[in-house]
Length: 293
Picture (cartoon, rainbow, N blue to C red):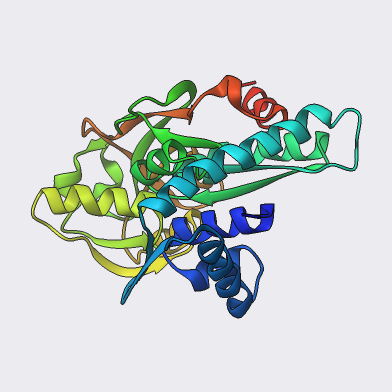
């Protein structure tokens, strides 16, 4: 039985994506090459690793065992690289960081810039996801670190405080809500919205709260970032919801108003999570230190 690190990384990508095609893309392999590697692993083990279906693939019990062991092996390799980095500058580390929308857009750019500038041999794979999906990925060993809202159940993950975040409604200066200091989500659910694109962790979070109230948000347009959202709100297209820090920053250059949401879930503490911080590779631990500085 012979596996190389590329095989293990590929299998983790496939397991996470639920698709050989998407996993091959993440591993920068052609689909035919990725399929051949999976078949080779299955033939070497004498057992099926993936269950194929119409909606993609998922690991068999043997595949789940391989995910577990591959994660341990790759984490150990990354830790070795980090701890030898001071002696072998050619080695390169990589940190897989998952974040919710608020942290990715507002709180991560500055510390990430400092970290990446100070550590040119380390790369960071940053991906935005909803908090519950981040917890699952970190617990399953598919990411090194996560940044989530503290409203999600964290299970056995270790946590460290990161930032505080407050969700607000953003309106144009002429909107009837512009004179309000506070508002509830229920009061604004019937308004036309400028939303964030499908896949946005924040937008999914808001959609879930609307669904719990038996409502659906009416989007006039959905955009890829909070800057574009605020510009459309400024022109009276609709209202939007986003992090207070970002909204107040945009208010300095745009004709918008910021109204606090008073719902119990609107104030959020953002939390760093990992399976075990002490078990992270050295370069990942240094990233944690920078994020908390």
